[in-house]
Length: 22
Image 1 (cartoon, rainbow, N blue to C red):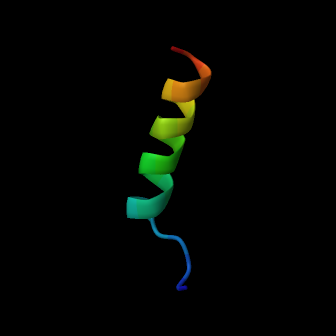
Image 2 (cartoon, rainbow, N blue to C red):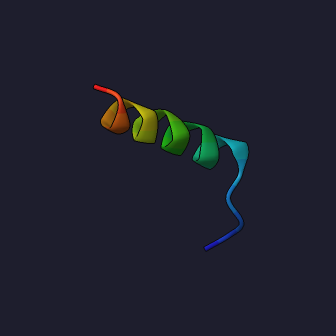
Image 3 (tube, helix red, strand yellow):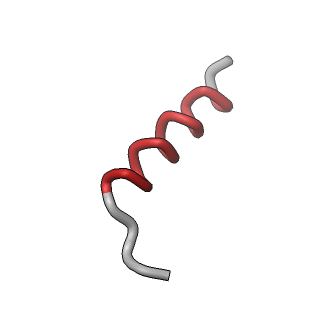
């Protein structure tokens, strides 16, 4: 797996926030 790029980090942060704050 290659290093995480913005296209990987941004969706992860958004998904995490959505799951943390419904």
